[in-house]
Length: 351
Image (cartoon, rainbow, N blue to C red):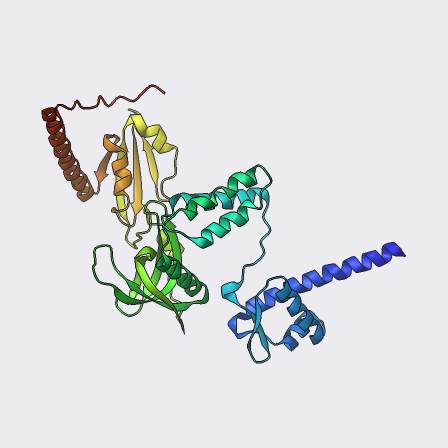
């Protein structure tokens, strides 16, 4: 009899847990308008008094339920963070992403710090202690209140489909211009250590633009919502080397010397890449990317082991840059010899 009674209690507990989860999902699906307790009671097959008790139970477990309109209940989307159960391997995968953020970010981001600490608590020792030491890396970054404000406003605008007003100064501009953005996507980029928003700008450009958050100030989340448009930001970014995308990608062909060919062939540099191995040990990498500007630093990093085959304008640009650099270094070497300084042999110590 005791076993039967315990089984009944267990069933009731499971039933209530399942009902609370179903209630939470129903509130989320209702959006900002909310849903009436009577409707929830009918949907879940319980009395209205039970729904009121369950709403309080959700609030006690930090689900931000509220009453936005008379007789209706909803979840505050800007405060809601769902519970996600992760395996240890899934947590490590997210920790890798957070570690990359900690290494590439050049702004103080309190939300990234908090996320790192919460992920670290998911691990057993000694991994937990090592993971917890990653958060202070972000603490040392310069504090930029306007960056954090822009990030928060654009995040809520993206989630709630609300317009965001910002003042924006371009990389070479001196004045700040007011823009009204419809944020469709936020994208971090490692090469530039920055965060960008892909948005429709309604007041000046009247088209989709890519803007850097670090150049924004006085961001304000507006009450007005923006309409959906036929734009897939994830698909658009597939052509980008970093953040610059285009509906008409450029073909870039690069020849890598036998010295670095194996290293080049080890990695998937871009979704569009095609690799061709040559008999002499070199390889040719073909890319279809949105713009050549972002790939330039990567090409330069290979030095003389990378030759641009096409497009011809990119090849000419790099040739001019290398000629100017050669003149610069020849001038510097001459100045050093006149002053009595001996140039370095350029040899690396044996490792």
